Structure formats: structure tokens, C-alpha cells
Amino acid sequence: MSPARDALAHPVARRARRARRAGVVSLAVTGLVACSGDQVRYQQRATIPPTPTAASAVLYLVGDGGEVNADREAVLAHLAADIEEVARGGAGPPVVVAFLGDNIYDEGAPAEQTPEDMEKLSGQVHAIGTAPNVHGVFVPGNHDWADGGSVPDGREAIARQRAWVDDLASDYDVRFLPDDGCPGPATEDIGDAARLVFVDTEWLLRAPEGECGTADDFYARLAEQLRTAGGRPVVVLSHHPLASGGPHGGNVGLFQRGPLVYFLASKSGAIRQDLHSPAYTAMREGFAEAIARSGAPPLVHAAGHDHTLQVIRLAAPDEPRYQIVSGALAKTESVDRIEGTRYASDGFGYVRLEFAGARVRLVVFRREADGGPVSAVFSCFLSQEAPSTECPEAPLAAGI
Image (cartoon, rainbow, N blue to C red; front, side):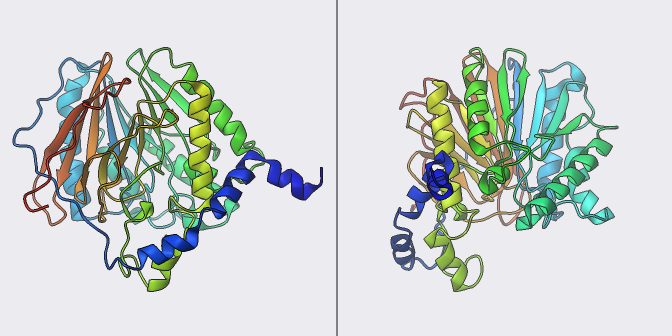
């Protein structure tokens, strides 16, 4: 087989080729009718769920916190108090705080460390506290990969950030995963309560091959980690979501994120970081193939990337049961309903998952985009069976 035909025969290349045939021009034409990203509004809960007491493990999902501002500090203060209450000085359940990428804006950890850049990272670390049953994990995002720089520059930025996290680990139980500039998966079991699978999806979007192997090597490893979970609920954690009603999912207006050319590029799939790009489409298909091969869909895929808070129920057998987007620690953007949306907000905040046997309780904490206190605004239970009546959509705000 010739080199050219061999490249086309490669599964990742085939996926990208199919994506390019998907009619990206029609997306651009359709998108021209929009003037701004749509924003859905839901009613807020009247009562706050009590602090979990029967949970066997608790997982916090916090994303896109790499910018220091007043909104971030307000959310981090609430997060720190919530962690302290749940951890109970070590007497509570095991607690994992997952920071879902874009941990240092705009270009990750620079070659020369500055106090300002270190504060972008350390401010997040301080929120986890020092209780012996709490540890934090940072996963890399596209900005951590030198914001679109070359693959060597990106991997060097990742190595520097890992070193910064290691320095902070002398006082806090915190890690950077995957820790080698490769896609992973890096797996942690919290006893029998849950399996956490950490993935570097920016590597997958670039698929640089080499010492990390190929994308297909990764998907084979992912399928194995799903298959061998031993009945534990599985949460896959990465920076990039598989579904989203935010700007990266196509909910972007004419001038929402810059000049008209950005809008056209986004709607046409020309931007690698958007869900409809060929590279992103190939990655989503790769996840679907790995899940189908495993025969064991994860309960949750948790990600950031879109600066929103979203809970989305997925229906296909080769998808996670739920997609959670929690990328609103330091930035916010508009978000709209898509098929399966149960809750969505453009506020700042984070998500908490409480594991207790076969059921997992989800709680969304939000601060309004224009300020105010942080409060619980949505809660429901998740299960592997995910019946259609589970986790009903929040009621829409009056007039929507």
C-alpha cells in the first residue's frame, strides 16, 4: 500500500476525512442568521441540598480558573468552605478536587516564572485546604499547551506546569495528570466508590504521535480502563467536552468572540478547538469507538473549555450517560439548550458529585454573571441505568 493510501486507511485519518465531508459550508450559511449567542435561563432552586453525610466519596469539578479576578476569588472562597465542611478535618469521605484545564491563562506556564502566573495556579491549589482526606488533580487544557503553539512548545509548557504543581505539593496534596505530556489515560480508583480517568484531550486534538504512541493506542487503553472498572461508576475527566451548548459547540453570535471572520471560521469547523472541526470530530468518534468497544459507558464525562455550567443527558450507547461542563471558575460565556440539556447557566461556579453506592448526587453551585453570592441552583441523582425520568430538566425561568 502506498504511503498516501496507508494514511487514509488509518482510523483517525478516516474519521477526519469523514468530518471534512460533513458539509461544513452549510453550517456557516445557517449560522449567519444569528446575531448573538443564545442564553437559556432556568429557575433557581428554593432550597440548598444538605452537606453530604452518607457519601463514600465526593468529587468537585472546577474548570478554566487560570485568570485572577473577583469572580474567581468569590467562587474559590465558597469552594474552600464547602470542601472544609465536607472533609470535616479528615473525618469525612475521600474528596477529590479536579481542575479541568486552562489552569494558567493565556499561554500556560511561561519559561520564566512570574508571581502573577504562579498566583493563577496557586490560588486554585489553596482552595483545596490541607485536610488529609482531600487531594487535587489538575488536567491540561489547550491554553496550558502554550495556547496553540508548536507541539514542542506545548509539551514544554506542560512540563513546567507539572513542575509548578509538584512544588505546591510540598504543602498540599495535589497532582498534575496525565503527568508526562501524553494523553493518558491516568486512572485513580477511590476505593470501590468510583474510578476517575484523567485524559489530555489537547494531545488528542493534535495527535502528534511519537513517544506517546498513536491516538488509536490511547483509545485502546481507554476502552480497557472502562472495561475493568469492576462495577465502579466511572468519571472521565478532560478539558474538552464531547457535547456542549456553549460557543465551542456552535452557540456563537456574529461578533461575540471577535471579528466576523472568527464567526465564519467557527461555523465552518475551521477552528480546531470547536466541536465541529475535523480534528475534534475525529476525537469524539474515537471516544465513541472506545466506549462501544469497552461495553461499559462511563457514568459521566466531565470537562471545561466552554465557560459555562451544563448538565447534559446523553442517549447513545457509545456515549457517557451524562456530560458535565464546568468551565466557569474565572470566565463566563453564553449557553443554550441542546438535546439532553438538564441545566445550563452562564454564571460562575462549580459542580459537586457525591458517590453513594449505585446513585450519584450532582449539585451545581453558581454565582450570577453580574455578581452576588454563590449558591446551589440545581441538583439531581445520576445512575448507570439513566432511565428517561432520571435527572429531569430544571424548570425554565418565567417568560422563556
